[in-house]
Length: 116
Image (cartoon, rainbow, N blue to C red; front, top):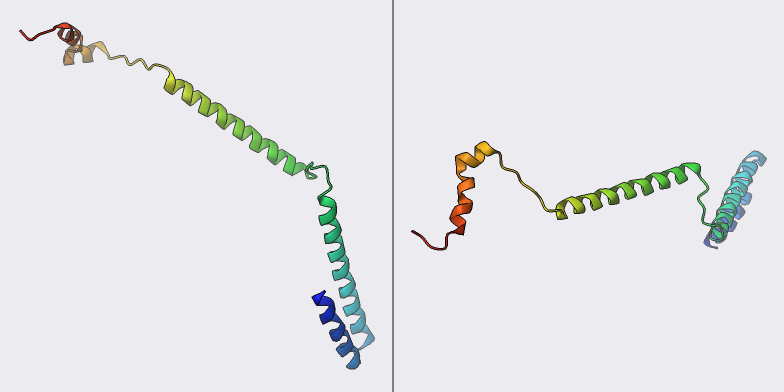
C-alpha cells in the first residue's frame, strides 16, 4: 500500500513535467511488468501451500535420494562399529614375545597363594 501512495504522486509529478510519449510508455511497461511479477509471486506463494508436497525438480529428487542413501550407509557403519567394539576382543601375543617377556610363566605365578 505504501508503494501505491508513492507511485501516485510520482505519476502526477511526471505528468506535470510533460514527458515524451516514449518515456511514458517505458515507465508504463516497467510498472506493468513489476505489478505482474508481484501478482505472480503472490499466486505462487498461495498455491505452493496447497501443493501435494512432492518436489517438482528432478535434480532435487535425486539429491534427496543421495542424502538418504548417505544417511543409511552412515547408520550401517555406526552399527558395525558398535558390533565390533562390543564383541570380545582377542589379542594374540606372538610366541617369541611371550618367551622374551615370560608371559607363559606368569600364569603359574598367579596361582600361588603365598610367597615362598
